[in-house]
Length: 92
Image (cartoon, rainbow, N blue to C red; front, side):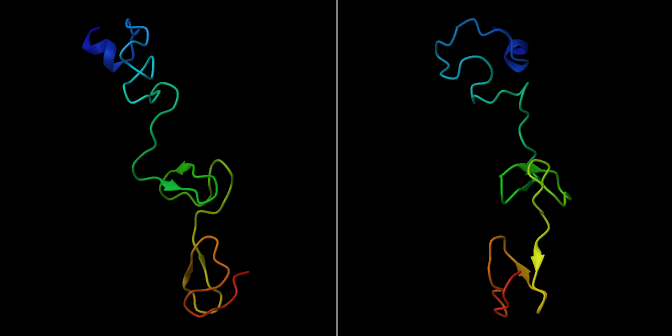
């Protein structure tokens, strides 16, 4: 198998021998169907999908990607928190 076949995912003549993942890259990632997520993306706290930088809502499930802030002291509220860690105000 030539280098271009390896880079561009040519036919694997070994038919799975020596490569536990079958066809494609040795890492098992199918680059043709599912491109790797970009390193600078935002992970959705709900569904774990990778979203582009600057996205305000998840493209998969619609969850807000903008951190909430406390209505009393304006501190950032982590996802899933029921109370503000700075002032104790209940999160609505």
